[in-house]
Amino acid sequence: MNASTEWEDLVSTALVGTDRRPLPGQSAGEIELLERAAVHTLRMRAGRRPVGGEPLSVAPPEEQPAVSRAAADRLARILGGERPRLLAEWLETAAGHGYRISPHLLPELLDQGAGDRSIRPHLGVLAGNRGRWLAGLNPAWSFLLEEATAAAPDGAGEAREVWELGTSGDRRAHLAALRAAAPAEARRLLAATWERETPDDRASFLEVLADRLSSDDEPFLEAALDDRRREVRHQAADLLTRLPDSRLALRMAERVARCLSVEDGEIQVTPPAACDAGMERDGIRAKPPRGTGERSWWLQQAVARTPLGVWPRLLGRSPGELVRMKIVDWGREVMAGWVRATVLQGDPEWARELFAWDPLADLLAALPPAEQESVAADFVRRHGLDGQLIMVLGGASAPWGPGLAGAVLQKILEVSGTQPWNLGELTKLAGERIDPALYGVAERLSPEPPIQEVAALLRFRDDMLKELL
Image (cartoon, rainbow, N blue to C red):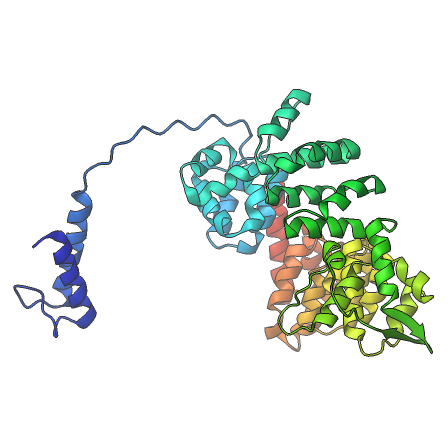
């Protein structure tokens, strides 16, 4: 009997049971079945001939400093299941300092990075030369080879080499640094290689132009509206929407002027009857999501892509008045479009008014950080503990200062006496977002278990961040 046939017999017997199909040559029970399967497996592994090949190259020496032993030990604890939600903060902080992680932790982190895109940029820095060497040996880890490394270009010659030969991540990092220092030069650099870039890189590099965006960028972005890749066209349209005097802004203003007007103190709406080629070029998608009508979809997008400064001029009302006016028949679409436009354009005045109408995390995030804290703290004091409260707090930039921290801790204290079973997510969020230096405030506030749980998490983070200094 050859090895393949023997294994097939063992599998068949395991599937139907030893009583119904005894092993060939004897009547064996379950124990002997498992023993024979184990022996067969070992024999097959031991009997394979070695595969010839070239010796592996040696990993290049490291250039970055390693994290401290204490920091590495804490990362191992996090990976082992202690405070696992703090992994992203540990990685971001360590990468921000230009460290590399201990080699023995690389395989597990690279496995995580294979399934979690959000941590890949941090791993690009933290993995060091050893990590990139490993990524070249395992296709599942090859994503690392496209991420930015810790090394920054040192002079014009090296910068040119990075742009011409670097990974996508390195090139984007170089473009972002150049954009911050010399916006026009960064745009010219991108324009010079634009036709040779991959569609994914074109879309990624366009995002960099959001920093220090100006009317000087309009001709380049207007040309990008004709790109073959939809993601590139939409990224260009998003940026042009933020330029109130751009040609796209003027075209959108003309379109919405035919759709919205004020009559008898109410906003009257006539949605677009069709989505023509010009609308599609300006970022309006013709095909609606399932369950959404075409005209509803076109209207919402047209409103979202119109610069917010158009509305007071067109409708003769301030943002606060417009948000509170009655909108005949199509109110949901218009309001959704205004919310999207506010988030896209980062307009604090509209964000303030719309948040009062519908508290959304994205609107809170569009406010300046100091105002975010004040608005979020007021919302926490007035609102009960539910999913919406958790969502809104998710929009407040971390770390939370004393004002918001105090409001959240008081809310935890209030609810601990009435709904202690409902506090899980809020206590975790508080421990992860409050400034960890405030752990003493939480420790002194109350001996109640939920408050002390927050304090313990804050102290853990405080120690963690100090180890990474």
